[in-house]
Image (cartoon, rainbow, N blue to C red; front, side, top):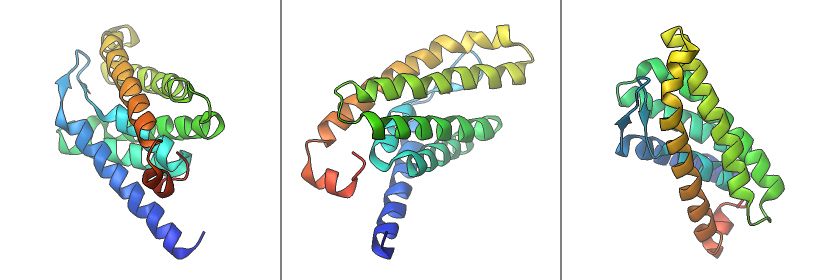
Length: 172
């Protein structure tokens, strides 16, 4: 990879990181477990498809963790960093293998969002000292996951039709 290509990748990663942060903060709906529902998962999944596993994980993890910090949920920053980076890593790996299939984003989304739902259930259980008590947040996380998968699938489908976008993001 040339220096110019590396710079482009870092700039696009920073852009997706910022977009993840903004999408996470633009609509904050408190959930029963103490966290909040948001639009950020759509961008985490989109970033994984656009940037690939490593840079997608970085953009999703850092962007979402930064949103938690800025939105007043600092207790969730470490968990969000790990969970969203894990989502980006898994979705990016799967998308690279399946991108030619019409259902690729759906499969990537289900796998990645499973990390989110289970990850926050376990982290909330740690905070609440009760896995049964933290299960109250699962329906909200499932709703967030469904929206994120649907929005990401629509966005990826639309962006794949653009030659300019495909040139910028060769992983798409």
